[in-house]
Length: 390
Image (cartoon, rainbow, N blue to C red; front, side, top):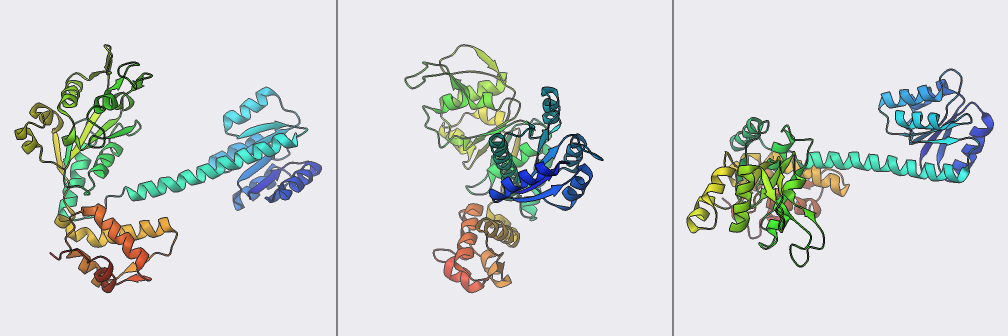
């Protein structure tokens, strides 16, 4: 069901359209000219506006411009008995969803209305999802350790310097990489993420550099690699400590020359990519073991960022708890739950070996199993089993 406004100076057309659209269970309002239509648009919240072009006081084209200037999400469908291809093109170029000539083809009209409503729904869903994504990417915490990380991001992001992010699993290394990209001059270009630990060693080179058709048995067509896809943007190499030595050699060459060659190919391809890498391993130790190239380490580690474990930033636990409470309750569509000071104090004394990832899971468990307020008792019952107090 949609809220629809019909703006037309012909009563018969308004009445006919209203009858048809109400039969389809839509809520319909009418306006006899552009001025009345504009007044209702400012007061109402319409999903679709059907507007004639030639009307007294304010014509349809002017009304369209006013709606666009107001930044409304509704879709405007223009109708006219004096339409030409030029008129239709002009309306759509200005921002109308569609143009339908009179006499109206009702089948065409209903299809257009359905498609316009689908577009409005997608726009609203996209806005909701973006808000959720932005909220989920918040860097929560004001401890000294986190202030150092945030300060480093602010300093490094505007440059093209390569960054190596280190820290235990679950601390939010990927989040740091996303913030560096978001605050960089490359933020309009893509951030491409590659989990080096999740890709078999025999496929990592094809994943990074692409391959030509016939390069190996399953290479049935040419494929671009992540270096090419990230051109102009940022390539985030997560868990780079798990990358094979042969792939490390190719990555080193790409960093030195800003060129890659697809697997099975001979042509050199220029790439403009900023590299951010992350690892939970001690790369100095891996170098000594012969598992990681020292020259690649020095190429990657222009800037080193250490992401602290949750145990190193326990002062942030109250803020993190409230952040996850809001985020998870909103995802579940339930009333926001409170958490007592005693419960927060107990959470701060616990040993979080799984870091932020584990902490979020515990908060979610507490939300599901607790009443309106999460108490110290709830933490003892649902979060403390198998946990150690520090």
